[in-house]
Amino acid sequence: MSADPHYTLYHPRWYRRRVSVWWWLQNRAYARFVLRELTSVFVAFFAVVYLWQLRALTQGPEAYGQFLARLRTPLFLVLDTMAFVFVLFHTITWFNLTPKAIVLRLRGKRVPDWAIVGLNYAAWLVLSGAVALVLLRA
Amino acid sequence: MPSTVALTVARYRPEQESEPTWETYEIPFRKDWVVLDALNHVKDRLDGSLSFRWSCRMGVCGSCGMKVNGTPKLTCATFLSDYLPGPIRVEPLDYFPVVRDLVVDITDFVRKLKQVKPWIIRKEEKPLDEGEYLQTPDQLDAYKQFSMCINCMLCYSACPIYGLEPGFIGPAAIALAQRYNMDSRDEGAAERLSILSEHDGIWQCTFVGECTKVCPKHVDPAGAIQQYKLAGATHWVKSLLLPWGTR
Image (cartoon, rainbow over all chains, first blue to last red; front, top):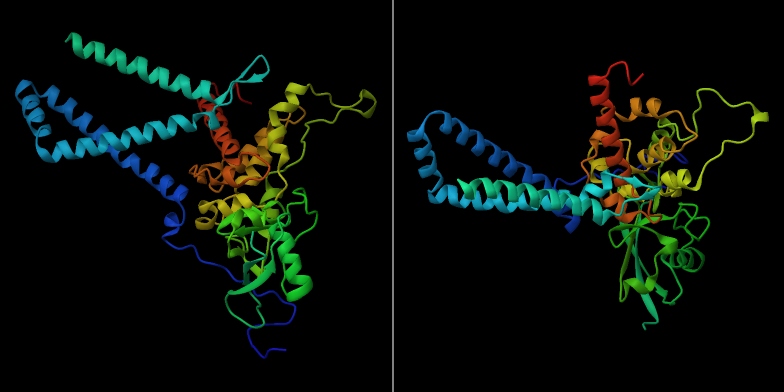
């Protein structure tokens, strides 16, 4: 028998593994998850830029012109491109996950996942089309 | 086809060591052997002191869950041939305290499971002479998937949230709560919601989705939790708009 003072015979001495702060690098799925969570920062960035745009709009044509000029600077071009890519990733990953949360039943049968994902993409297309129409007309 | 394969097993003998070590055994490779067969070979022929849990050998009892090459698996359904040429690394499930070698303490899970009241709750039981509670195949279909859970806890081991927030009720317990909520005979949804909408309930889940991937029974706990969130949020909005309607 061991003379280890910390161990009492027949009494469990558990080993608890600590979770590393780098747990999200352990496998690809965790890394993708953290990336998806991080996209929300860029969604927030987009929202802030929109608010800024609205503010410029209420302050008159000169302020709006200044706002547009600011957006054309390389810094904002790079930031906007990054934000666009991340928001796209955000949208696509969340659309693909919607069937997990939304379970629809039609005549007792579960509506297939592709139909629910498809409806999201269809709504996206229609709304984008409507926005494009308004912008092109103007 | 190799004649042997190396099995690297995590050992933790609290009377000897303060943290787990690795031990490698060379075992005969057989095409029809699963990791559990290999562990039993070690126990029978090479080292009788190796401790692990198992019972049915057919993916029903949920006892033999371990991490194989880093992924939570039922070792009775994990073939050696899928891990050639080896070595195959076997370790206890993550986030549960290790009692010895591959055996973890599951008290926390059992306590949480009980918390969500995984049984049929009736406001009033029907008298016996009225017969059984009938259910249509569609009504059965609504919850059947969630009822396939065998409490193997692979989903807990795959869930980083459970690792980071040990209070989290966790995937299997929530899926089983949903199993009873969706049962047409049950009337306990409100009771369970009051437990699951608390801090350590459904809102801890950030939808990593790995619980669903590792589930050997295709229960889809991640789906159950998201559906629960949607139901919880809808209930909350309704109670806000129609305070008299949700009672």
